[in-house]
Image 1 (cartoon, rainbow, N blue to C red):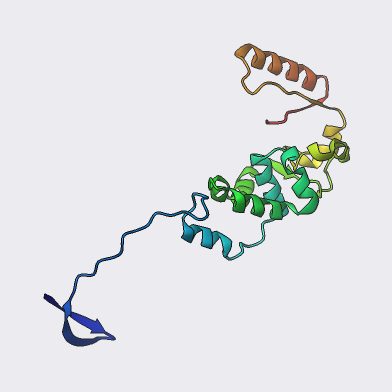
Image 2 (tube, rainbow, N blue to C red):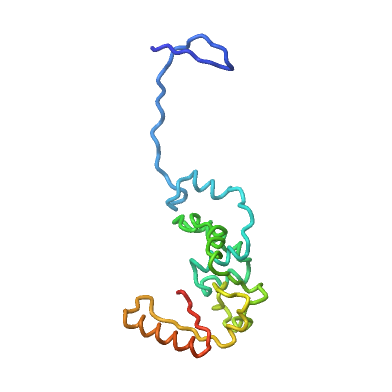
Length: 188
């Protein structure tokens, strides 16, 4: 047996024999078949609530990951921050937990505004879209938004557009803008 000394509260104690300890084998289990280790499941279940997420940041985060139709039922019952927290809690991939809504919207708003339904400049006509109403709008020149949306034309297309389609869309959007209309896009 080896002998080692111990220091407790600055005093030297008598050397004690050192015995090698063996740990029981590690069992690799998951919480109720979810694929989440038991400790992680407990930390999710009994986590300290995070500080309240601002409505604007929650809506921007939800819009970045989901369509309005995917969220309509939840948003009818809960606020946007509550829906975001529920979605983060239920996401087993961890993708949503890594997303930092407040930081993301703060950084993005350096170049444009994220306008939400409670803002004074929110276009009232969007309410006609019902469950497909956007969670928010990214806009430059938000102070002029009511005037800009009075004659807006949406340009949409395929996510996998060909070079020819992109060129046509650019020419079309330019002609619309030169005619005095506002060109909008869904950023889908």
